[in-house]
Length: 82
Image 1 (tube, helix red, strand yellow):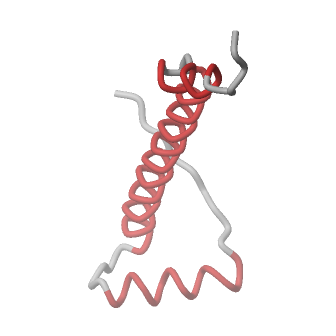
Image 2 (cartoon, one colour):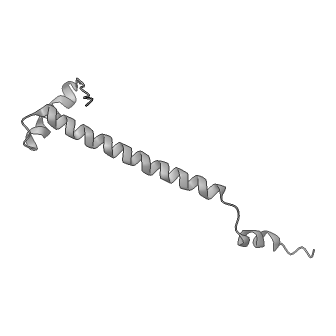
Image 3 (cartoon, helix red, strand yellow):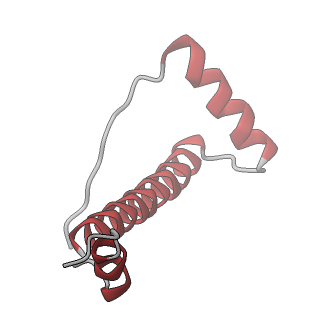
């Protein structure tokens, strides 16, 4: 099994925030808590990306759709006698 291990420096801004949130969530192991919230954040980002791709694909399908017969009828109904 492949394991991924990363060492991150969260700095003075996010380090204390992570420790505070881990304490509020009753996690003694701050690194384990960080791994859990990072995994959830990555899943959320992927889901958002899939949703955005779906919206873009739908927009492209709508633009590429051939005009309906009603659209053609409106174009032909221009009061020209021939």
